[in-house]
Image (cartoon, rainbow, N blue to C red; front, side, top):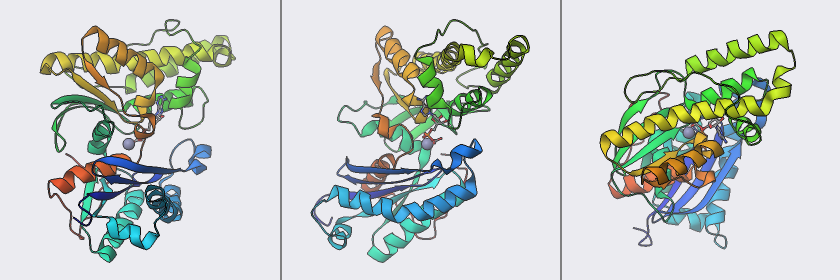
Length: 343
Ligand code: KG4
Ligand code: ZN
């Protein structure tokens, strides 16, 4: 090792955040994220625009992540201390992934250091290993993002198994699509959260899908919200404006209940009581609150990553890269990103 320490530069570009982070011996020294506001006007991420924005953002974001971690050093000397480049290999938008992976490959080649391909969903889970207070193995993780909803058993940093997942929409999509029906801009999840804070969650009732085992389904919820709004608006065209907080609180309560009922079932089935949240939706205040309440009730040890490590970020890629580096799990320069990937 160059300085006796393991220094990993992590790069994330799977969707619409360009991010870079430096991890030294398992501790995060920088977490730089460039968001892409260009998508707001389109009501969702436009892949072509995302790729272009990544190309514009990647050099300044990586530069800032390195300079922030070593404030008094020059870039040339900083790069000499990096032991490996970790990057998001899958899953995600292929054009976006290509920008991060090509950048990572080129830098690894020019510095003559190893490359570590990282699975984005595994990295979301390992965001729980960033804090000093870490879960013990085996732990359960409910990973809830814009593209995935999964319950994972994590036996060690690199051994994980998905034991439940959504058969249709992800929880984040359920938030975003519901928000769209309410006329809110993309991404609507944080806005539903905001309006829900002053609303009555018991005012409107939406159905809970009956899906066997530990799997989830959210597409029926979206349809029931659509029909509900159509019916209410046929009587009162200002129904949404007049009841926004209560509608948001009721939708949020339903999504959170669906998620936590399955998590409770997973804990009972596996006997595991160290339980984590991960992914963008774990930023949701209603989910966080009820997860903590459930934890107290069932004597779980609960863990939620810091807010900046819940939504897409490169610190989770860097820490996963750190564990893979220690296990000698490297990728060669012929590695290609893939939009979908089992793990
Ligand atoms: O993990 P993430 O940043 O990106 C993916 O990998 O998908 O998750 C993004 C998702 C979006 O659907 C967004 O609406 C949702 O996380 N989200 C929230 C909140 N913050 C982000 N959903 C509900 N409440 C929030 N506070
Ligand atoms: Zn994500």
